[in-house]
Length: 250
Ligand code: PEP
Image (cartoon, rainbow, N blue to C red; front, side, top):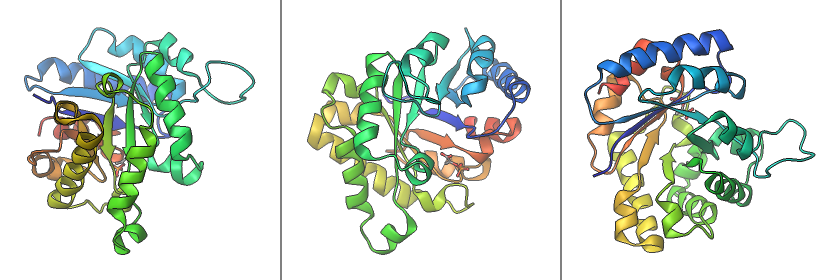
C-alpha cells in the first residue's frame, strides 16, 4: 500500500563532478533493482541542474534540500519554488533539523514553504524531530505534535496526499546514535495518529513517514521491518555509493 522511499540528503557536500559521478552510479544500480521502492537524492542547489540530466528518465528522483516560499524578488541568496520547478525537481526537504537549528527556521516559516512547494508541484518532505534535551525531559511527543500541527496548518487533505513526513530525532543525526527501531516505530505511529486526527484514517494510512538518523546498511533492515516506517532519510551514508546501495537494497 505504501511504497518505501529511500532518500539521500547530501547536505553541503559534493562538487558538481562528484555529485554527477555519484548520481550516475545510483542510476546504474537502480536499473538492476527489482524491489518495490522509490529512490531519491536531495543534492546541493549547485548540482541540481547537472544531476537532473543524469537521473532524467531513470528510477532515481531528484530533490532540493531547502527553498524559500516567495516566487521571486529581492531575497538575495534564496532559491524559489519556481526555480526548482524550472530544473524539474520532484521533491524538496522542508524543515530539516539543521535548518531549524542553525538558520532559525520556525514552524510558521516552514508552513509557508510547504504551501509554496505544493503550489509549484513540488513534493515536500516535512522533517520533524526532538532534541536530546526534549527527550530527556519527556516532552518529545508534544514537540513533534507541535511541529506537525503547525507545519501543516491550513493544508487540505488533498494536499496532504503529496506530503511525506520524515521523523528525525536530532540526537541521532550525524551522531552515529540510531534510535532503536522500537523508538522510531513508536514515534512514527504517534505521528500517523496525529495525521489521523487531522485528516482521517485513509490519508493517515497512506502517508509515507520515513525515519532518519544514522541509518546504515547494517541497521536498515531492522528499522524498515517496523510496520509504520516507510523508508529512510539518509545523510552521511548516502554519500558513499556502496553504503547507500546497501541501504536501498535492505
Ligand atoms: C539527515 O541528514 O537527514 C540524516 C539523517 O543524517 P545522518 O544519516 O548522517 O544521521
